[in-house]
Amino acid sequence: AQSVAQPEDQVNVAEGNPLTVKCTYSVSGNPYLFWYVQYPNRGLQFLLKYITGDNLVKGSYGFEAEFNKSQTSFHLKKPSALVSDSALYFCAVRASSNTGNQFYFGTGTSLTVIP
Amino acid sequence: NAGVTQTPKFRVLKTGQSMTLLCAQDMNHEYMYWYRQDPGMGLRLIHYSVGEGTTAKGEVPDGYNVSRLKKQNFLLGLESAAPSQTSVYFCASSSTGVRGPKNIQYFGAGTRLSVL
Image 1 (cartoon, helix red, strand yellow):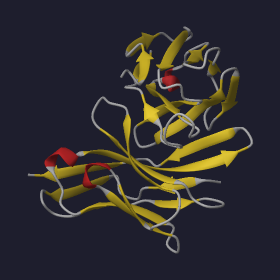
Image 2: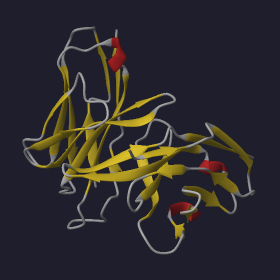
Image 3: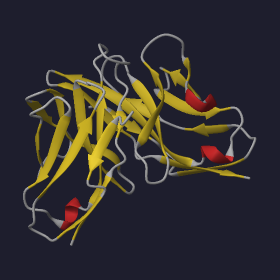
């Protein structure tokens, strides 16, 4: 079965400091991994994805994620956090079947950047 | 650029009432999805569709039905609402790669449903 785990419900970081939001996954076959961000009262917005290729993936708003196959992790990172980065972050994995593609989301991590 | 539009934005139902949530996308995407978001549980897939006239069950399909009569619309129905269906519902669409980046989901703003 496909699944993702986000071990931290809440992450606090000071503005200007680097941030990491953790995600581990369990998939059969090659992993298709994603990060989305959700601002209050809004739908999710795509940040970045890993399909194949370089283990370091760059995405929107200065975010990047590192794919680590041996640790089955796909952690989201940013070198210098902004207050505007405060939001809810979701990791997701794609699963394919004979009825089409499904996406499984983690439980989300609330990021607070402290001025 | 409307993207994905959900109606209504808010609704309050009594137990046993029925309703339909409408999702419309103007990106000509093949795939459409319905999720529910509950505190501490993330997003869970209810039903999805890979094209007009086709639907499939997701993780939590019980108590819901869907229809996709037109490519741009995906309807989610609750025949007899229960308090356990109180949630925020999100619709999303994605392309197979023909008309946009593959595998990226575009979400609507959500429908907040309370069942009393």
